[in-house]
Length: 442
Ligand SMILES: [Zn+2]
Image (cartoon, rainbow, N blue to C red; front, side):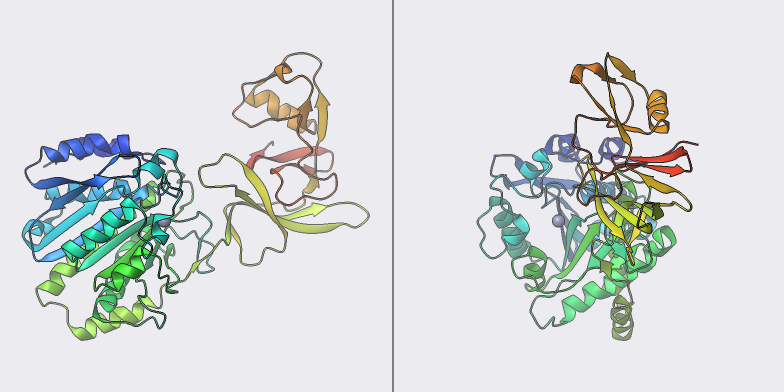
């Protein structure tokens, strides 16, 4: 059986989601007798913020997404979750409506979503406003927590693509946290339950994304909502959606959020029925600490290993290349040398290849650059053009450099500069890095 939103889920197969993207789903749910949709309030700029309620059972769950406007992955996931519950497509949860009251606020920060930025329209990070309470959006969430008094709170975010799962070379596609609610990181019953749920969700995700589930740092952050809400007695679970290889739109993390939240609901059902005892919860709590740490900023978009630099002083170095921000199309040289435990979402072992900064070609007439002709220019050692800007007719998929200060030094790379250089074997250019994209020319 399909639900009132099944046919709309595909419209959320996006790298970013805005307020208007979710309106058709909200509209469809308003006409669905199995849920209620309540206009919870407006953002600073007057965009509507809705709350969707499914079920009327004793286990109360509150989930919110996109408190940071440019973190949209789980917004799709909560609609996926609603679809599963409304279509009764998960047999173990057919009775969900009588067991759970699930409240969902999809997109708490629609103004930030509109601009694809973290902050709201006041330039305030809502997730640092839990004490100051100067944002409409943050107050809306806190009021909901105080009125609904959820047992379980899902705080759904996205994280940098450069978080590594421990030091295993894989991205943290999902990172979980049972946030601390005091500096001593006290573990009370709700926090223990959150940890146990996280261990269970991690186990369930393993067959899907083995070695890509991490545990977020639990330093107490008093200005953050998760930590504050944990202090109000809800078993609070932060889920950070992260990168996966060859998944720029984070559809893998989207699916993992969906699977994880369903797994949590199944476990809560068993716990409610008395099928999980204290010893099992303790064992799961212990297992929480064995989840690899979410290691900050130790991945790069492209890691070139062992490139040779030839000159009076020859050396070998690895090169880490990163995006300036998740949604930017600019890539820069982040680090050069021994990059330690760093790994790349894409890696290339340069082997016997040597670094070449490339040369500049002066255009004397209008020149069409296609993908193929650009490869030829690169083979000839040309990394950028100069001349009147209208002479360059770029029809290639690449960001071709023109009239820029040389991005790299002639003999050495320059940090923080755009990532453009060539790699040679003897006289032949066999590969290039063009704005962080690896191009193999053989
Ligand atoms: Zn966030």
